[in-house]
Length: 123
Image (cartoon, rainbow, N blue to C red):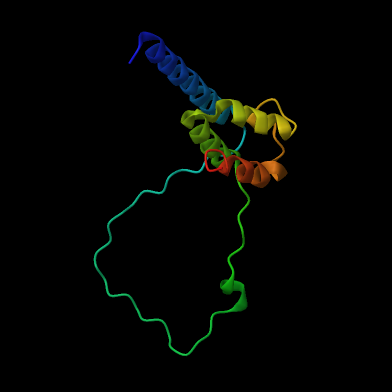
């Protein structure tokens, strides 16, 4: 591997690191409440009661409600795309959604932004 190619790889890695650090700083600076990870506890093996037979699920249980996307979820996907070498494309997508940085994107745009980001590298 030539020195120039190695240097270009290092520069790309540094840019990716910078984008990841920016994403982390934005996440820490946002005013949204953070979800604490749930701690897993080991329970004693107890037999589970069997559900009653011949009952149909209630209509409300048939389709769970779709939860809106959060800034952190979108940031996680975009950071992965950026680390995969699509930093310029990610920035372009954010600009197309009317913002200079991800935290300025309207939450109503998150789903469309993610859909556009998912095709990066797949198309």
